Length: 372
Image (tube, rainbow, N blue to C red):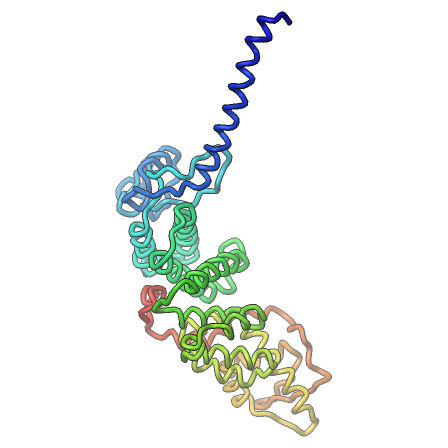
């Protein structure tokens, strides 16, 4: 290489190095940059056009009268931004694609009032799938914009209530229609985020959700420790005190007391507890199988059903599933006959009487909005 060629290459090298240095600072500035959404509708116009062209509108979003067209059109009053996985090279910070806090809350209220609570939209498994995805998109917009405070709390409270209610209502559904593990993952994440928001200041419904968190996570040392470390005002509130009493009964393996306390819970609290009911009832039958194990001992089936908070026929079915003999209106307990793992298909959904009785005439909308 001659001298002139070398001289020509050096400035390029310096410019390239300088450019990399500039890009480093640009990356830092971008990392610190917090976008602010400007989209005033529930779904950005660019996504509406794209999903129309790709025939990806959900049936809840299609404009009436265009359902049979090759490419149905979107009802702009009903179409909601769907969740999109972050992809390499995709800009998720464009202001026009992000919804500000007031639009996000309005979107959540629409999903609750016009979709989840609408009695004509069936099956509810499809309703759940749609609302679940759109709520996930709402949380994604909140994360990108680092939304916090009262706006964040209002969205997360409704999200947690919806996921708790779904965990009860869809219990026992086929896995292809409802995955309890996925629902649990998103419920725990939303609940954890909500409790972090509560740590930053006082909020109206904090007592309610601190209690729900403890009831849903019975047996968790972390959840118990969190509840015991709450400020005195919150810890001594009636909902948290009741939840702590239920938690204590669960930790002490006292299912009789737990089921007695469960009758005092409101509907949503019972939804949070319901996934622990089968194990608590099993523990009760194990306890009675040892305490009343005798050839001549007979226990009234109706009394046992009342303790279990079950109808008599379901109490008998539960006993038989655990190897406990039923003789007419009497239960014959035997510690040698008891089986820890129930035989046959024992559906949790069939054992919901304790929760069902609490719902009565409560509407889905009032449950999720917290005005039940």
